Length: 450
Image (cartoon, rainbow, N blue to C red; front, side):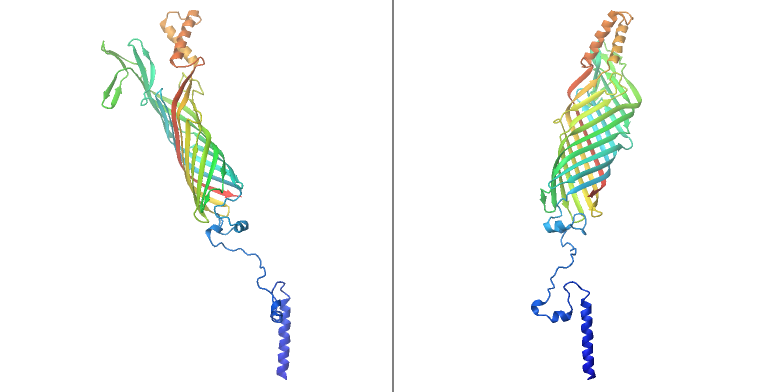
């Protein structure tokens, strides 16, 4: 009897405890008594919805290109791959070290000037916004010249210049010069605006983005502490095989007499001797190819071809026969110049939205047949004309004498014509300038998406 009573009491306690436990659950879970006491058709299903949980991606194409731990729900549902560009704003900034060369050659004047190993410390910032199919972007670069770089102004190897005519010996006189200085304190500015077509040329893990835009590159270079030699010579040059040597003498072969020219000397110019501001600006076409290595790393390559216009404005303060601050100007329109830009980057994700990039850049600009303009100082040539007339002595020394003024004006006009200048004392020469600028650099930067 005791066993029956104990068994009955234990059954009541177990049932009460189970029913009490079931009151803490509001979901599909039921007590064992409830489940076992119902017909099979009324048993609850275990496939009822559970709280949503993140499922770790099973392959690289399901993962975000910036982090393996975050994948937007919308992208998983639509089946977009790792190369799909996300809409929104993006920003990048970086620093780089570039080494550049710039030179130009004057075909008829026989001058060859070049700046070598120009070092730029460059800061850049780039921004854009991705829409459904297009991206609008822009960039800005500012560079400061680091240290000093050499400049060579070579008027010897390219033939020199015509210096005048010797009536005594009935010969043309030519002048050559070579000078070298140091360039420092220069600056560089580069900006561009463009529009690209995105997510239309994707091939697996490779994404190709074409774009068009406008780019402007300007730089300012100054030369200080210039020194060199200048020499005038006539027809007294001697050849030794491939080598030609000329001496500063006018030699008369009939009388076997010679006279050394006065225009042979060395010089030193301690201040600013050359100051050039150069710009290349025009439209371009670009193609960016990006390869997604994995969810954290990618590499890209860029090629850009442009058709910039060219303009160079120079001032040479030690030239008394030229105007200042603008002494010369060379320019060419679109069609005579072109540019080529190359770049490569490796990028790795630091966070979901921040990436580190290390890259290489190369740029080349060139123009052929630019027009050259020289601005002459009329006052200087007027003083030279007066001096020539006073040396002759035919019209006295009174500068107010009408005969003296007429004679000086005549000489002044002859000087202007000898320099190829018009009435405004501007000399023009078409298809005169060939020039190029090239640079190579290493860049490190950060980029972010918002």
